[in-house]
Every structure is written in C-alpha cells, then in structure tokens.
Amino acid sequence: METLILVIIGLVGAPLAGGLLAGLDRRVTAWFQSRQGPPIMQAFYDVAKLFGKEKMVVNQWQILCAWVYLVAAAASVALFFAQGDLLLVIFVQAIGAVFLVMGALSTKSPYAQVGAQRELIQVLAYEPILVLVFVGFYMVTGSFSIEAIWAQETPLLAKMPLLYLALGYALTIKLRKSPFDFSTSHHGHQELVKGVLTEYSGPYLGLIEIAHWYETILVLGLCALFWHTNVAWMALLLAATYMLEILVDNTMARMTWRWMIKRVWLLGMGMSVVNLIWLYAG
Amino acid sequence: MFGSFIKKSRAKSPWIMHFDCGSCNGCDIEVLACLTPLYDVERFGVVNVGNPKHADVLLVTGTVNHRNKKVLKNIYDQMPEPKAVIAIGACGNTGGVFREAYNVVGGVDKVIPVDVYVPGCPAKPEAIIDGVVAGLAKFAQKVEEAK
Image (tube, rainbow over all chains, first blue to last red; front, side):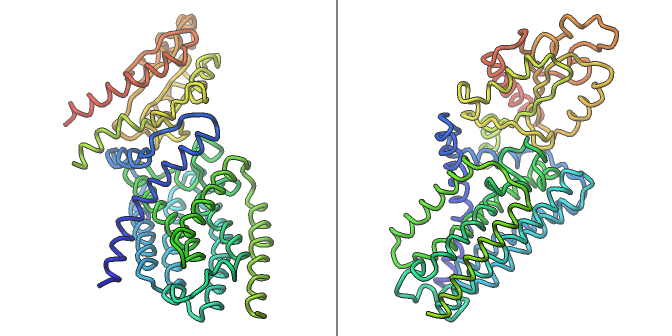
C-alpha cells in the first residue's frame, strides 16, 4: 500500500517538479545574462500550447515512439519511487531513449537523422556511467535495490565521491546542456534546428517534453540517493548540483561528439573505476 | 478546465520563426534585437525557433520575389494550426521601394495570408514587439471563431 502511494506521488509529482525546475532553470539562466526571463510556469504554458496545436505527423511511427518514450520515462520514475531494482529502472529508461531515436530515424529529414545518430552516441556515453554508478551502489550495499540504500547508516557520498562526479556527466547529457547538447538543445535555431526533435510537432512534442521532465527527476533522484540520511543535506546537494549544471551550461560552448566521448569515457569512467577499486580494496 | 488553460497558454507561449525573403538585413537585426537583454522578449515566453513545425508565429521580412515565394509558402504550410503571420518593414508589407522591380512579387500577403503589418524601414524593435502582441490577440480570436 505504501509503495502504491509512493508510485502515485512519483507519477504525479515528477512532471510537476520537472516542469517547475525547467521554468526555474530559464529564470536563473536569464539572471546570468542580466535579463528578466519568462515566468516560472513557462514550461507548463509551452506544453499546454503544444497540446492545443494541430496534430501533424510525418508517419504513424512518430506517434508510437513519442508515447513509448513518455510511458518508459514515467515507468522508470514509478519503479524508482517504488524503491525497485536500479538495473530495471535504467533498462526501462533506455527503452524510452531508444524509441525517441527510432522516431527520429523513421523520417527522411537529414536534421532528424543526424540528430538521431548524435543522440545514440550520447546514450552510448552516459549509459555505462550509470551502470558503473549502480555497480558502486552494489559494492556498498550488496544489492541493486533502492531499499538497501535506504538501510545504510552513512551517506553514500562519503564512499563514492568520484562516482558522484561521474554521474554529473550523465546528468549534463540527460539535461541536454552545454557542452553536451549537440543532439538537441534548448536553443533550437542553432545548427541542427533541434536535431532529434526536428520532425516532432504539436501534441507529440508536448509528450516528449513531459517525458523529459520525468527523466530529469529520475537522474536528480539518483543524485539524491547519495545523501539519503538527511533531507536537508539531500536538498542542498541537489540544489548545488543543479546550480552547477546551469553555470556550466552558460559558461561552456558546445563541443563535438568526439570530445564528449573522450571526456566521458576517459575521465568519467576513469573516475568511476578508481572509485570502484577503492571500494573493493576498502 | 484544461481547455481554458490551453487557450490561455497560447498567448503566453508564442514561438516565433523568422524568415528573410531577401531583406537588406535591417529588419532582421531589429527582430534579433528583440531577443537581446535590452528588450528581452523571452519575458513573454517568446522563443526563437528554427523549425516551422515548432513555430506559432512567422515573422517575414523583405520583398517576396519569384524565387523565394515557393520557399515562403512551403514554410507556411509546414506550420501546424493555429498560426499567425506578421509582415515586417516596408518591403514585407508592400514590396517597398523594390515593388516595381521585375523580379519582385510584392508584399508577403501576395503569397500567404498576413495577420499583422509592422511598418518601418527598418521596423523598430518596439514596433515588432507590438506587432507580435497584436498578432497573438488576432490569433486567439481566430481560434475562438474556428470553434
């Protein structure tokens, strides 16, 4: 019964929190650029407007792919809130990510095609990091389930600080922020006119936006697991991490996918492996 | 309730797309000036998108000629309803000083329906913002009438 309530909180609360966070993000970004910025509720206005637009699709696949992306993102958040198995969470989330790419590949637009290839490379970059972080959880708790993490007495950040830094790479990629925003970015007029999202429009783009909110909350939830013992410290950790993300987004230029693969695999995986060896030896 | 929220949201989230039909670049830089911190139209939820499939408002500058009229029509057709078109500057409105030229079709309204005309050579950023606001009011009215 308690699990069911948690799942409902996750399913309803995650998109609301994700949307607010997106609005807050734009406000803070505007503040960095000495502008006023849109209202905090802007993300909800955008999505509501998209739902009111004409349904225009290139082919039927796009409808299915947008829905599967949303359902997979929501299901992974539900599993996360149900304190389920972390590996299951990541694999369900990966299904959604792959369907988003399939939807883009099903169209003939060269922008969508290139965007889809780049999105695949991004998935290839962040998935191993996530798996290594889960291996770290396993080495500390002896289980892949989130319940085992809650049973720990000390915050995990003390034991896996380098894995947290590596998770930061995954967060930056998942939030589609600079320097890793080359498959699609918030500034859609740049380069690929929105890359993987080029051919999605109207309500289907709205579905993808909601799915993106779910995924944001999922990755931030993973970050929250690193300081599960105290809610105040958890909130502080998340706020600091997200502020750093916005700062990085605003101060970094976009890089190429080769640069991303080098950084994320060498530095990110290197840090993860060093931390894992440390956990193994200790 | 959700329906009325969608209706309200339309005016609060206009995603603009900007198309230059061979303008002298005067109106174009004024359009882009609206997005700078001085005018900051993002306050009103305006986002400059590069994709007609995501756009609500089409801003057109420059004279339409026989070569780019097809492109303009194509971009307009790719925008999902409801949508609005705003012609900017003397050239966009009527063809300006080039209207008699042999390759010039005339104003934007010769090819696609225009909702708002923003005068000026070049149009001031204030006038463009006014035009977008007037365009949104018109487009809300259009949606009402369609129902």
